[in-house]
Length: 448
Image (cartoon, rainbow, N blue to C red; front, side):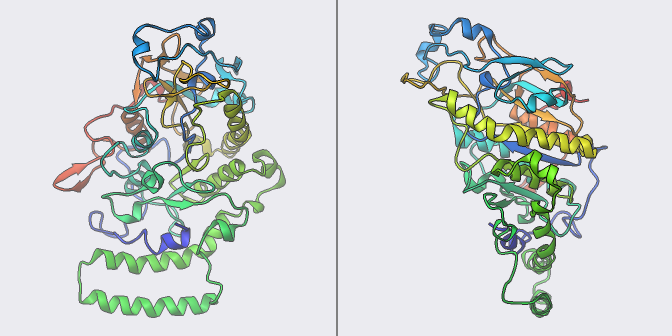
């Protein structure tokens, strides 16, 4: 859905619980450390063993069976497969990072690396839905929808929750940014970020057949008719939202085109991010959050690009090269402007990968899916810098210390945004629903 289409649909559910303007800025439960979130999704499941969680023992066990018990699980039954990439320590913190990320490694002292993430299922679609919505089966709102529901937006002329993915949709498609039972105004807005031209990137935002004055007159007429219709249907929240959606659509025409036009950036900024899809995506993300958008998700690509069942040595090197420079540029940009202080940046996938080789073993080995120990990193927004939280065992098979479930991650994100995850609720089907359901604990060990 393009931004223009969003303006005519995302406001279809409205003030039923909040009263007044449901997108107006609101105060959280406690002082927030983060005002906004940029979630960079390495969809497909990057290998923790090859990126941010070095395992020297795995190198020593190369080609050996890890244990008899693992042979019973075909997914883990392959022989040990050490990383083809070299790790080294970086910054004053000494965080070990793979050679895949030489530019990002210069920001090691800004990172909070969680090496003990766990999720429920080692399959893409349910793992994506768990990471984004906190549930693998039932339709639930995305984290960004909850953030927007709780905080409102700081810019009434842009959507408060944007999801970018070039050349199509990630696995699980639009369910990754749905609002589910929350009013539709809180759903994410999909942007196909493959384009350079803002008029193509922001679909349906301009009407080439009408001047602005004519559009204003047209909308005013429709609004009068809608108001007459509403007078006969008091309390029709969908109709009230439709009326507001037309106003937002009109306001967005100038603001959205400006926000997505990266050509307005200085040459040195454009050079830092790079003229690539990943560079443009992250630069747009920064431009959106500085204009008041609360939650921006950036997917690496359509489908599941980080899914490395084979040829991980080539595939991971290519993917890391695509995002290494832009990631470093984003962190440097946010830090230089002072925005990193209250912007939470998250990088990671929906799961990790096995320390064993994918079966059947081919000439170009890869790794299978893994749910019991993987890595994400965070930066800014109230988390510790130059910090590593949690550990996996000596071969990277299982998280063994300070395990962090996805529910815990969600509770922590909401905490940083100023919310008690147990109190940010929405009444639905006779129950006070929340992002973390009956689970989740704030990960105190990563809070600055």
